Image (cartoon, rainbow, N blue to C red; front, side, top):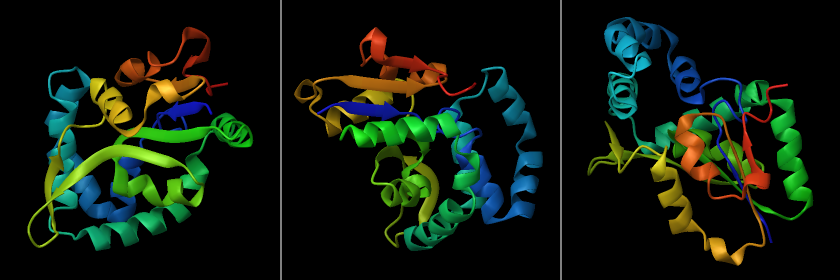
Length: 198
């Protein structure tokens, strides 16, 4: 059996699913959060503010205090209403091709796992994503649980979930520097950077 590893945002989708989810959840607070966080967003864009910190800033303003059950319901509606429209056709064709080959497919994403899990489950795809911290009442704290799932952390999660030596071949698909360590898990011939942009 082969293993296919896909980044989601920008690779399978044509935009950032985390920000789209926040906007979908509550548009007015989302735009207010963007205005308040604009200085940090600008610093992030020039690589002077960490990705993790900005993600936690949005989580604290938008999702803190919600339960995992609430988030799951929101995610189910979001995945049904919004995800189909942002999937790149070439990416979907490639996923279907891997499924026809009986390959194991895993989405490896920095987006919180709970947000994209309903879409992945609906299409028989595994998912590894950023995990969200909860308190003793099962409410989101606005913090991440563990590391943001990007860069070397993607590789760590993959190695913890799969015995890579058991697969005949590995294919990897990504579109940013945060995907490069994951891309390196596949041989050069099966390593695809920004493959669905045509």
